[in-house]
Image (cartoon, rainbow, N blue to C red; front, side, top):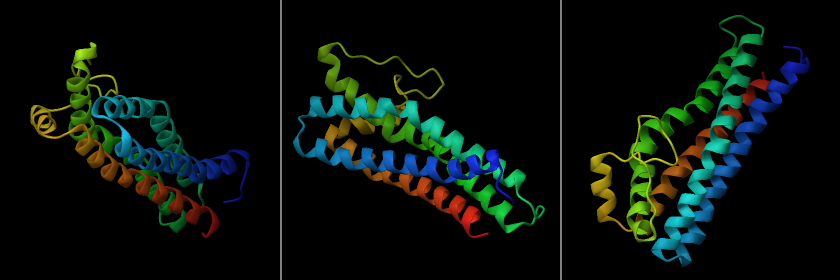
Amino acid sequence: MAPTGLVSLAQWAGIVVPSIYTGMTLQDSLAVGTFLAYAQPKTLAKQWLHMYQRGPYWVIPTVVVSAVSNGYLAWHSSGGPDSTQRNAYIIGAAIAWSVLPTTFVYFEPGINGACKWKVQSLLATEGFSMPKFNGIPSSVRHSATPATKAWAEKLSMKELVEMWERRNHGRWVVSLLAAAVSGYATFCL
């Protein structure tokens, strides 16, 4: 595929945008360690919630741009349906896109929901309350299932944030893989 303006932009976006996601997600995971070392439970709850609620501002845009860029490159690549380059871009798009369903189906009703439930429990005396889940994943609404709420009640905020940190490391690894596959398709095929 000969680089044209839009193809070049898509190649850049297919590599750089998931790399940005990787860096931001890794930074969030690593920053949590500092919070855990020093923060009291209520302070930790506020810090985690503030960091978590920034996610929608950059997660969805970076995932969508990465997936769409790789999809466009797959569509635009030469060599037909059996092209290795085309298939690599399809794989890159699928890997990049996988972050969203994983977040909405696994993280939100699980660890994110548990952390939000614990935040509300800890900050209730300060008048903090989150609206109930309305079926749409949200950083400002509860998303914990009844089982997740019961689980959160048994653990401290520190324990929940440690679990969130470990799970969150998986997301930056997935995004780094999407960037690597896109880079391989762009530079090696």
